[in-house]
Length: 332
Ligand SMILES: Cc1cc2nc3c(=O)[nH]c(=O)nc-3n(C[C@H](O)[C@H](O)[C@H](O)COP(=O)(O)OP(=O)(O)OC[C@H]3O[C@@H](n4cnc5c(N)ncnc54)[C@H](O)[C@@H]3O)c2cc1C
Image (cartoon, rainbow, N blue to C red; front, side, top):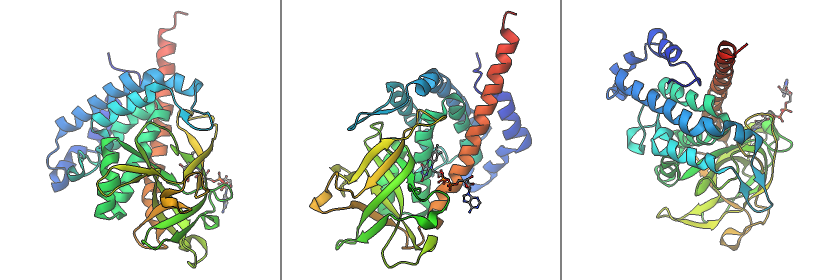
């Protein structure tokens, strides 16, 4: 029986009758695809969303993540669902074949993702952030950064975050204070606090790749002085093995009215909870050029804007479908 999550007939109408997505297969990038491959990934998404995401949606909401001062506890269904999602190759749905992706058009990859947002927006937020983080690095990272961080994210071993906001800086990113001092080896050491960071801590993946906006001392004031850094929760060796814990510490979890299954965190960078290499500061790796961080971050912010809007639409629509079903099937 078809799930109540979304209407496949409506999705097909939007994708095929209105947007004519099959015409995209005339482009070299999508030449391996066809209506059949698009349909197969949509079918797979609906099945996984209904079987592995929807059943713990309510539990995710009533038993939100808990921090005991050392570890974050999350209901086990979240990790199981994310393993199935990653195992199906869906993290790389829109990414290039060469990084292990399916190279789907973005509109089709987003339509697939809507099933997960309708089923369980809290659990879906982890891969949502990971995909955005990986796409930013694919666009602006070095080949080494892509090998070290993006490939494990596509496999589902690492997850990703976006660290812009600070306790005193939300919309006003010109007020960001986190600083990044260059070390002798060319890497950076970060010091500061990031607030409201979604997916900022958990044990759902082996590692968390934080993308952090910070200031290199001496740079211009305002947003023109922001640079972007990769700050992994656990440092990664040249051969990809996990090493020392980086100095990124969870100070606490924030509670929300929605998306409650997604951890939302206050993170302290370089406050001395850990001392990687014996020196103070969280080890960070510059993405692209100094002082261009906000323009790189917009790659992920714009993707997040589309995704959050899609999530709201999926939530509203699934709510309507469930209400309609209830009205049609209630005994009186
Ligand atoms: C559920 C959730 C998840 C989040 N996840 C992340 C995350 O993963 N990473 C991250 O970095 N941040 C995250 N955030 C933080 C989010 O980016 C900020 O909440 C957002 O930038 C707004 O900042 P603020 O809350 O400080 O509000 P403020 O900036 O204080 O804004 C308050 C109000 O003032 C208005 N306002 C602000 N500036 C102006 C202006 N110049 N002119 C007119 N009106 C203005 C705003 O529209 C708003 O109505 C998250 C927030 C939430 C609620």
